[in-house]
Amino acid sequence: MSAASSETVPFGIYIHWPFCLSKCPYCDFNSHVANSVDHVRWRKALRAELAHGAARHPGRTVGSVFFGGGTPSLMDPETAGALIEDIKSFWPVTDDLEITLEANPGTVEIDRFSAFAANGINRVSIGIQALNDRDLKFLGRLHSAEEAMRALDVATSVFDRFSFDLIYARPEHVPKAWRMELREGLGIANGHISLYQLTIEPGTQFYTLHQRGDLVVPDEDLATELYEITQEETERAGYRCYEVSNHAKPGQESRHNLVYWRYGDYLGIGPGAHGREAVVGADGNITPMAVRRHRAPDIWLDRVEKHGHGTQEETALEADERLLEMVMMGLRLNETIPAARFERIIGKGLGDVLASDRLETLIESGDLICDSSGLRATEQGRNRLNGVLAYLFDHAV
Ligand SMILES: C[S@@+](CC[C@H](N)C(=O)[O-])C[C@H]1O[C@@H](n2cnc3c(N)ncnc32)[C@H](O)[C@@H]1O
Ligand code: SF4
View 1 (cartoon, rainbow, N blue to C red):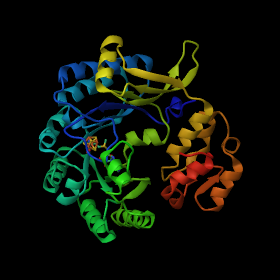
View 2 (cartoon, rainbow, N blue to C red):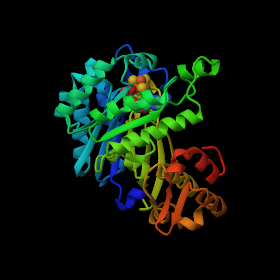
View 3 (cartoon, protein in one colour):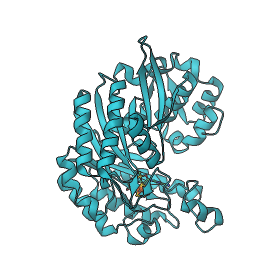
View 4 (cartoon, rainbow, N blue to C red):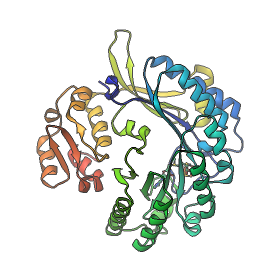
């Protein structure tokens, strides 16, 4: 059934804080600008939905907690603290429980890092995005490069573990400039860095500009060159590309994100949060479920206050859906999807579940490796993963 039912992958908890100080023009995350936020009300609602989730999943061992957003560094540190205490009272936790907070490098947020640490956060993931003011402005960011540096300085002194994000393949991003910027970033990094190619997401301001021809992103050849520079520079600095966009020194990988990529179970709390939950029925049978909360913050809040949870949709995952999700996630990693995971999650062996002629074509083209130990993507396959998946499953991914 679920990968985590054997507890090879610890249970993860994701908590979504949907508010930001402003909306970035490239961002399609569930983030909203609110005039005011009633923190006491939000704290109560998040705790209520967490308690509802805990009642459905007794006895799991929690290995990671992730506060994502939006901008969760804008929440009251006491709210994070109360949720962390609740988690520890509901479930056993691993000795090395990872508790990450996504943070923006604005002054308000930086000044709260110590308070977050005092409330139990032990890792931050900071959205730096670029290391020069011109590009930060273009990306609609409220912070300067100087503030970004200060955020990284404070993070270094407050947290044992931190990561930060940069976005590359920006308009007019030339290879030499990206190499220098990345070198600078890697000089400050502390074991983990996320490097995302700018994507133009429908519904964003950048999408409208792009459609009009007013925003031009690097073509495929240039994007590939920038990707290759990314791999070269990170490797040179001792970072392993353990996932398409994530690079870490040994042992510094994001344990929470590994839960997603290894197709473990996780509970999603807050507006728009998704969960993958193995629900144990009255008959003792385990049903893997996809759970999705109401996306709009006010609707979610209203539902939680009325019903104790903001679930909008809950569906049992069929074997073919589980297969697709597990392979889509697992091939992102620089590791093999173990053959045993196919048996456990799909109930069938690796050879029985994948269209073998398509699989063979992808093995011959050097994109995938499949043997008795399991299935994995080569570096080439990961570089063009969407195309590989679309071909493997014979539809658009
Ligand atoms: C939820 S957001 C980050 C949280 C935090 N509010 C921030 O902006 O720093 C997660 C990360 O996704 C990346 N991201 C979001 N939209 C993107 C896009 N269209 N293209 C590339 N990266 C994107 C950014 O690097 C961002 O830091
Ligand atoms: S990138 Fe971060 S700060 Fe900007 S709108 Fe998205 S979630 Fe908010």
